Amino acid sequence: MSDAYARIPEEARDWLAALAAAVGMSLRAYVVQLTEILLAPDGRAARAEQTRAALKECNGCAPTQAEEGDLDSEPGRRLAQAAAR
Image (cartoon, rainbow, N blue to C red):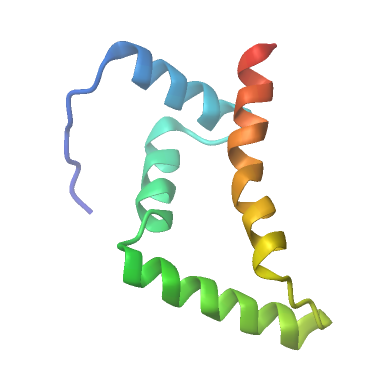
């Protein structure tokens, strides 16, 4: 794997580094994980469908669209809560 470099504001770098440290990861590993998570819209839709199918098969979990919406907002809520500390 080769490294790529991107110039970002220092505040953004520090914020990402803090998020990485909070989950016990290096900044580099965290950014790699983010790129794997942040797929194109069609990739996200496919991954969401795979996740729904796996949850239903594994434990019968079949959340409604409203419940999914609540779950989608959870990371932002937690980040805001952590930033307020």
